Length: 122
Figure 1 (cartoon, helix red, strand yellow):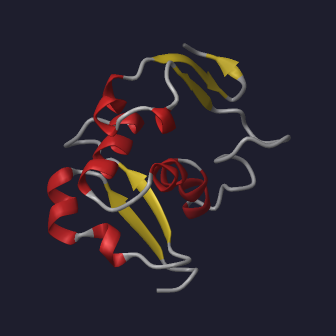
Figure 2 (cartoon, rainbow, N blue to C red; figure 1 turned 90 degrees about the horizontal axis):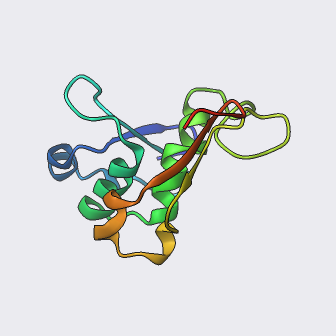
């Protein structure tokens, strides 16, 4: 698999077990996380938890899958997906550092603030 092949990691537990997304990826593949919105809840924190629980990906890979990799897959990496001057400032502030807690506790992490295009919306 090459740098230009885009893989969409659908973070539904049954799908992960059926298709083994983590095993299908290789170096340079752009893995993104998404939700089948009509059949599942769109919750990035839950997506991270399910991805860590059901596949062989790291927390860093899951965060990238939901941020810069998704932006790249949509050809928007110059506008969104990471925090840089000139990009839209979409960010959440969490109550705990996901890198310092047990994976099983991720779904319970409180979202303290949400900023959309630089404006606080929560």
